[in-house]
Image (cartoon, rainbow, N blue to C red; front, side, top):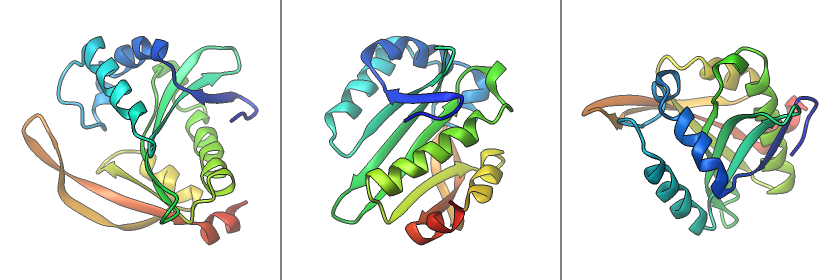
Length: 174
């Protein structure tokens, strides 16, 4: 997947080192269900497990200047139900925040989900207070509700806001 400023490519084992660095940063961990400092070994183990599942896809966001910028994890990709989940997406380098790369990534991803994978429904969720929720609304996602106490982090429970986009809603935005 490619746009004016970014390339989204399949993640490789070699990306685990940068994923480890990113996922140790507080501004990343704040909105992910990561309980502690994750070691390289933990990131590798998770990467390998996800790669074994046919219903998962992992991607790395690269800027056109070849710099890695973020991570994407798609899951629950169902050809039977034509649905899937954007489970994790983040810009990992703080210097790249607020430059529109997140929106550009989401636009590329939605094109991929609806036009390549031929999905009918794409879901995602986010923590209360995550600014990305406003972006998802602008892109055309609809709130479905709050999944109360559905995430646990540092022995505390958190609500997750469930959002979705249907094919017909996506087609109205393009």
